[in-house]
Image (tube, rainbow, N blue to C red; front, side, top):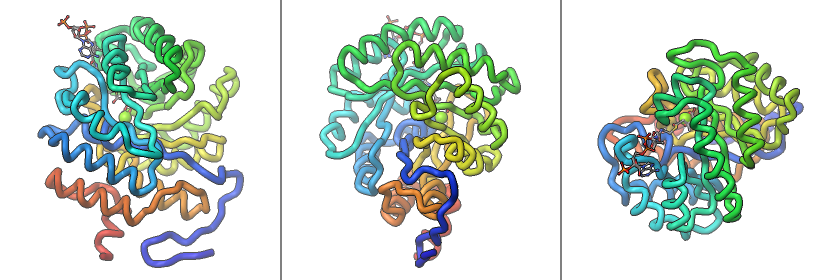
Length: 314
Ligand code: HMG
Ligand code: MG
């Protein structure tokens, strides 16, 4: 057992991974919902600081239609400002061929398509049915794989949907299988509106295992609307998941989903993981300083409990 100022005591948990890879989504999921446009130089500095704090995967931006997500309309300008950062993977979102062309044109090495388990969100987010969206992604994934890119498949509304309510497990498993079969290397299970609870997470992971989706291809993506994101993460880790999405300072939300509030804060996640003796490679002090700096840029305090606790101590 250890513990010093600014660090959690470490008490190893049972049946948990030794290491977790954090997929940082702050610059993309975190900022996409911000009303006032964040200057490109600030976004680039945010990404540099996140990488310097030890995060090895930082989702940089989206190559979507600029009218749909105006905050990320500067993707062409931003990506080259950070693409030569050493030791960090910089995935970008691409919904279609046009998005992949833009990403390939700038030398992106990792892309993500983003599907929905529900018809309502597929329509709101992609202007497509679930199956039309999958048909749109299929050639994108094939071409990305041919170019040697890593491809992540996001799946939104895995637990509940603001228009449709609870989402049946079988509906989620069907789309997951399609994403794996089309060649996605990794699947990120999204609780877009943050309504999941740990038993529901365990049930979905069990169902996916039964459908032959390997747990080492899975990541979890929790939003913290009802304060369940850490409990849900622990349930996923106990089930063998080793990749967790989070957003520095707890920034985030989806412009096309009512009630999608902030993502699980990376600092809260790191506090729990380090407390469990799980390595992340992240320097919590540097990360917290980055979120305090970003909160100053956005003009409001970070909602992360860990950021607040650690920054009040300073
Ligand atoms: P659409 O209106 O159906 O587009 O939108 P279209 O295919 O009919 O094309 C219309 C025009 O858009 C054409 O131009 C295209 O070239 C252009 P025109 O010929 O009329 O001049 N266009 C593009 N321009 C630039 N880049 C592109 C692009 N594609 C078409 N990539 C579309 C369909 C998919 C484009 C649109 O719905 C879209 O951009 N959606 C993105 C929405 C989004 O980014 N949402 C947030 C990310 S998802 C999320 O946050 C959830 C997640 O965090 C996980 C979780 O929490 O659950 C991942
Ligand atoms: Mg999200």
